[in-house]
Length: 220
Image 1 (cartoon, rainbow, N blue to C red):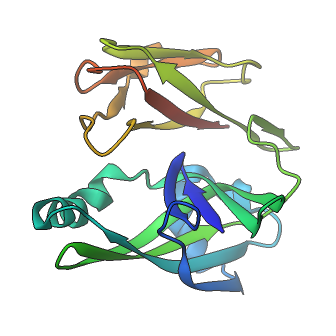
Image 2 (image 1 turned 90 degrees about the vertical axis):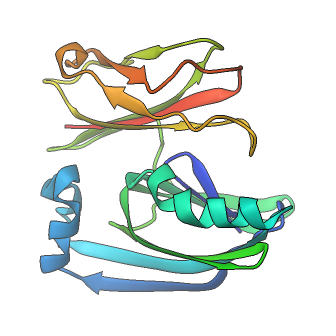
């Protein structure tokens, strides 16, 4: 099993840090919808159904410094809203299930020497194996998401939507780095450069090399 949230891999059996203790609790949650008001309540219009996914991972680091740094900075580095993609099965028998508009509601990392155990809780409107990641359209909601490669030395990223929205959407974005040694870079959206056709995000610093990506989602 592999779990990717907002473009960031949280757990991956093949990489050596599989999801453990996986619990999936389906609820009819009317008050809990308030947790995701930033993503608009109409995303959960089908009876206010929510799925709560809980699991933990265990990762070992080369030094105590790296383990403690990871445990202290993980929450701030992770996106709090985004698509959650779970790959189930193994070998050639795999399938991706997608929850669009999921929210990371809790993270509890615990440093145990050079090992860090991280417990995650993700709330979503449900997992749909037939949900495309690039564009969703419905009676009330339009959702688009994507991944943009950031060249070395870039200080901003401009995204043009493949299909324009009816108005300026609500946009969230995060930056992934190529590996453990890369700089931590985050995006800041320009309100004056956000409209129905696209947006521009300024980076906290120039990318020192290639391999960085902007992961974004837009909802209207």
